[in-house]
Length: 463
Image (cartoon, rainbow, N blue to C red; front, side):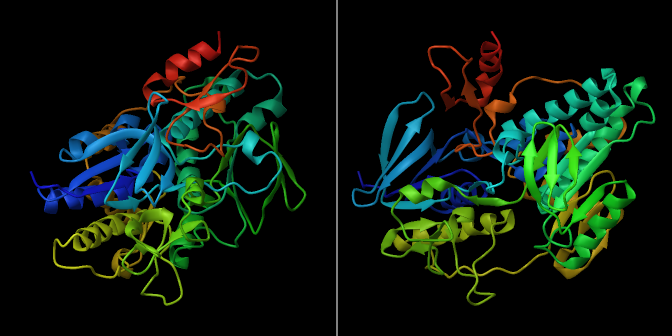
């Protein structure tokens, strides 16, 4: 029997999923594809704000890798190291056992984690929105603050619980603030004691405009929509200190609040530092073919890769989902070419198709192919794009969007994920952490666990 070369892909995000999909579609008879990922699904991150707001069911943004990639061998586990000389990847499986898998070609697409700045209290009192556990926790937390505000007798406590601070106004921060405003407004209608009580959404942004990485027209549209809804935009401002009862801003004002959403950006997964591969700014250095210098058998893609941007000499392709998706297809083609298959390797080039920002309700900002759009037209383009790009669950998501337009949202806490189970600086954001009670034999240790058992573990931690 002829030996089939094994291509191992680390990470099942946009880049890893599309690499596996491309290899399966074109070379499944010639190549053995193995995908190592902490979860058994590919998370469609752009819809996480909709999960927080209860518009889209959390299960529907999780696309089954087994169903979408039937010809790929799936390894559930978290990578812990790499032996490039022996061509082996070390990982811990979903039951905590140390394993290794060999490869002929390796694609590193481990993605990114929350970017944490050295600001006092930020890791302790704020939470990100990059994973499904974080979205589930944040939804419960927002509902809980409204419920507690409804029974608070102290007016100052009530105002603090109805104040929500979003730090960072990139994609995630802007969309979270926009969708969150409408979500909390709908929550207040459920509680008569909160009738007429104002809700504050405050966006703290270091730059002098929203969405600084995008065209100015998109930022202006987002700013206009958020201000019209009553959001407070603190542009040119930073956070000096985060505390359990609020945040201290760089202008000296202390804002009483119980909710801090930290969205200042992302950084490559720090596991990259253990691989011994050349890096640039924490990302694995590659050539224009996405091959790693000095290791022709290793490739990198997505947020983990410092791929030269041939459209901007001297620059790197930005860490966006649009690039990660294209990286996946391009790196698959080049890996196949290195094994003597396909039409040959090609340098990674991209054509900017535009950007989309969902602003909740019937509002959005978009510039497809450079054409600026806002309002309903932008919303239709944004929703259509997401449904088109999603690798699965399109009908389920479309049904969620339709039902949200005609039915009131459910105002309930599911209690699946505790706040201490999703720390901002957690090493593995895809999985909630097991948190043991103080004084237990396990002490203060935490470990990653599958989301399916998070509810049972959280219940155990309260006993």
